[in-house]
Image (cartoon, rainbow, N blue to C red; front, top):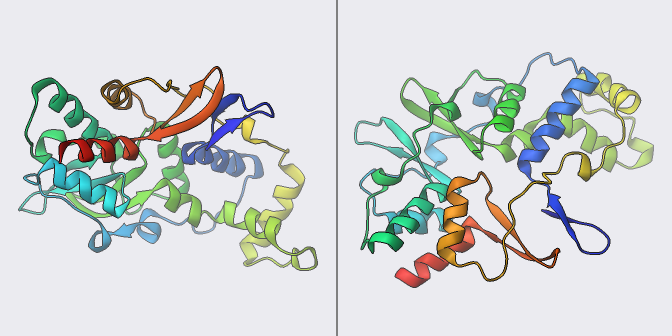
Length: 262
């Protein structure tokens, strides 16, 4: 979400990645005892529920599938069930640029795959370790691997939804005062006093990204695609005279590309 001051001036962005920093800070400050930390296996979306792509799939078709399923990326699996990498909104930007330069009529997914192994985790990786990985990498999803086969996938949102730390805080903050003392589990009964006593008051400004790339209203789609390709951001705030007038996402750009080319 864009962050603006009382005068409407743009100040930065607060994102799921910023929430990873919130989570890590809570864990550090409260020194929360975790008896059984949830692992990737407990939280991941299993392979059977994932959108997966063949390396021979047409890029236009794959882009449409991402948009229809509201996915930022999908694993690419070969005929031997081997994981090849991720086809994503960001790798699509490479296709948009190639098409603009070379007037490509079409291409296969295999030409636009991210093969970075730093995004791969295994089923035993615990949730708080995953949160720290998300702080260090630009990806919104991490494939969960068993050897060279994908068995599931985990997103930043999955971590936030399943974090016992945040769940405890939100439950107490949102519960009626007369029942706020009731903890959902013995672990939360230990966590809550630490949160109340040791956690200072924070605001969005403490965790927001104040160095987000911004664009103007006259920038063309090709230039925006190039920016998306070289930056970790999924959205660019659109600014005029320091004021936020809107934002454009990678999805917005891909929808327009499909409209123009199909």
